[in-house]
Image 1 (cartoon, one colour):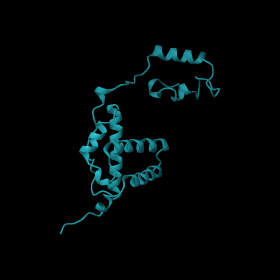
Image 2 (cartoon, rainbow, N blue to C red):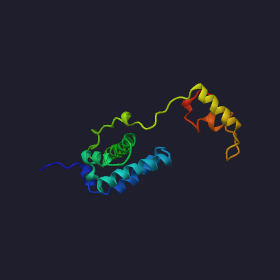
Image 3 (cartoon, helix red, strand yellow):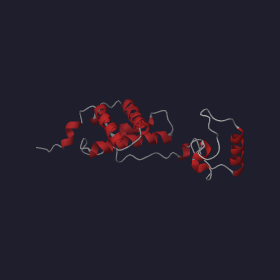
Image 4 (tube, rainbow, N blue to C red):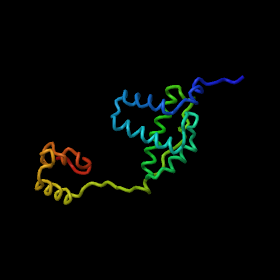
Length: 166
């Protein structure tokens, strides 16, 4: 007579029911609605490609293959994997899985597939940007593009790390 893990009863349950609970958990932990929406859409895309309906369908090899079949960049595949791993880790911590089936899956090297390389602006580029924006009309909200609190200085127009302090 073998022992049955209490989580085994969950293996036949719908993944969608658990995704609803996972969504509630993420929101309760203070994640933004944008983050939650993106995380769930990534998990659902992988589950759809995998054809997974129940927790028992979450197997590392087929899940990896489903992510590789998505028509996205390597970095985006890594985001999908991270979302799925967060979900299975949560399922394990909640006692809904006896173990985390994705614990051994690692990220892919995105460096050779890098499509956008961020770099700091040169001094000349920054001067030209500031001069051009100072001469531009106000934005749609009526705010100027430069000066204290402007989109340029707050980093909402560009990555703040791309230039020094304003």
